[in-house]
Amino acid sequence: SYGAIWGICFKYKIRMKKRGLYQLKDTEKNIKEYTLSVLTEDKAGLLNHITIIFNRRKMNIDSLNVSTTEVKGVSRFTIVVNSSKEKIIKVVNHINKLIDVLAAFLYEEDEIYYQEIALYKLSTKMFLKGDLIEKIIIRKYGAKILKIEEDHIIIQKTGTKVGTQKLYDELKKFGEILEFARSGRVALSKKKRKTVNFIKELEKTKSNKLNI
Image 1 (tube, helix red, strand yellow):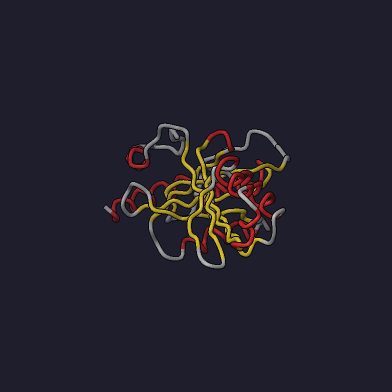
Image 2 (cartoon, helix red, strand yellow):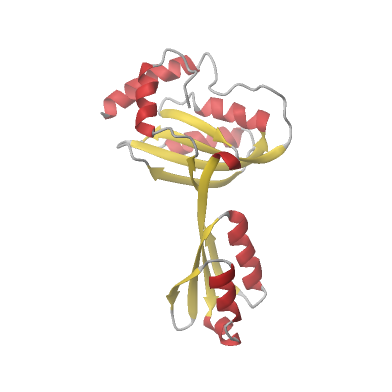
């Protein structure tokens, strides 16, 4: 139940104050991309508490997505940042101390499955130049035409940020892109962990060294 989840979370946070979930084993200074997956209770105001942690460290969030999970009352924040390992581990340990956070996990690119979605609004005049654009959209980049209107066409592509950006750069060669929007990343761990099992494990564990 919702109350039970809060109770589990509170007990876990008491332990978290003594030791962080992630321990820094080196002083790596290289900047690279990291993805945070944060499981939380579905409560208002939590987004502000999490973003403040990044703001205080002057860290820019490159991508942010909030979604439901398979567990009722539990939400997932997926956050993408470019940071040193040393700095991001401190952030994750701080997030884990928030009462309404069940757990925050840190991943590198090869540890997750992830996707983003991009929408491109193009003038219909661009498609009067023959079928070259359509070949680029459908065959080369695997995008699709979402909507056709009298004065514009909406293109949709799902993939990585690199892939959606490459399509953007190529379309620019044919004319002005009227509008462009890219979603935040959605990601799932490659590990076999289930959220509901993790919460049960959280309740049983007597230390913060969880099998995650």
